[in-house]
Image 1 (cartoon, one colour):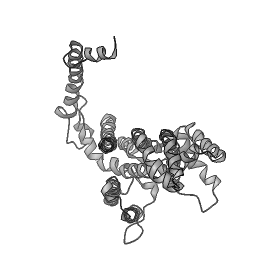
Image 2 (cartoon, rainbow, N blue to C red):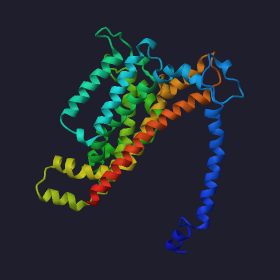
Image 3 (cartoon, rainbow, N blue to C red):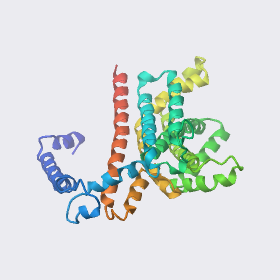
Image 4 (cartoon, helix red, strand yellow):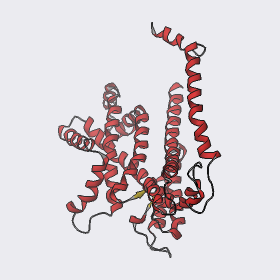
Length: 348
């Protein structure tokens, strides 16, 4: 059967399509009905301890209510958690503003400098009457947001020259970039985090060793930069060589050629893959728990250690998963929006 016949056979009114739709609806109902009963109908919303959530009941959301601040902020001092909440809101606000092309103005860089200064002031403190808090106490959602933003932004900063070096005609640049990318891609993120946490203090002289948070951020940036560089290299290869030759023939300088002709087209070609890497970076931050840092997932795990609330791991992981789904869904939604915008621009 040819392709047209296959498409006609799966038209909306075909028996096969109707059968598949009915099966899908039945499967959805089979899963959704007991899940809704467990999560809403039979759930326990208020209780003082685990005795208020009997084994035969549904989800014990009272546990989430009792441990909400621990899950969201980790080991950050309880009385100072308002600082972490405001700092996280500032960081998210900077990202949201930066994703809107209408705000791509020279003052955006100054806004980031001021926002990061406010973020550092709130998180570290030590001035203006704020108590000093070591970065080792940072955790929960603020740490996850920080590592994601730093990993993706600086990962792109490192990835662009690495991708250009791999795509260049200079053997030394190409070999060095290839060695870096293949070494990083050949080991898991856990190994990179261990090496950054253990080996950096050995290689760097005394007094120049970054804190545990700095070492983790360096490992995440180097890891995802290698993957971003390889994805971006695929976008560079999709650009017709005639465009570059024509630009050189017109006397366009190399920085203008790369910044206004090559990179915009390359990023557009690999946008879906980049969005996928951003989501992977967000979820990859959960691995920092192995180097004694408590991100959102690590804080959810720590919430189950209270002897007054034992056995509610499903609720803890479900709540953390809900937050991850919301964040990943937001990244995916923005990526689809950019794709549609670019499609409309190309259609004009």
